[in-house]
Image 1 (cartoon, rainbow, N blue to C red):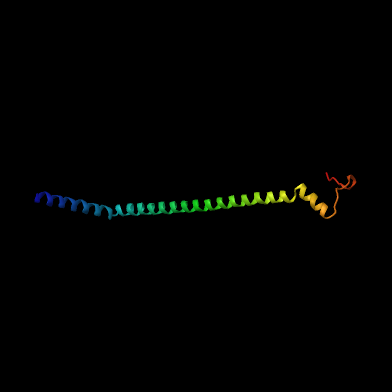
Image 2: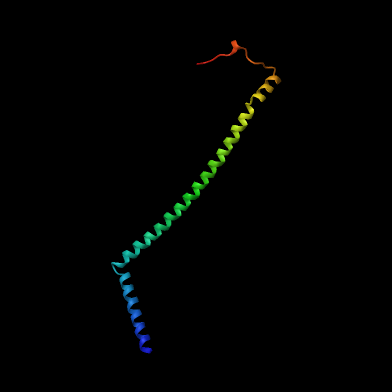
Length: 107
């Protein structure tokens, strides 16, 4: 039992020692740095993507708001230029329909 524990301890220390030696060697360190940089860049690009999604959503909401406002303004314009309203204003200010010779057609 004691022999097995000491043997497993030696094996684990040898393995951890060889792993440390390989990782911090002249070949292992550039690999670690490369993977670390790739990981950081992945996170940064992902954050930028999420940020752009938020901005896109915000712009789409503004577009919807302006479109709705545009529809409301068109409806208001249609109400103001309705024939009923124009005739009522004409009666109020004493205006009459133009005669045929008063109408000028520009081609």
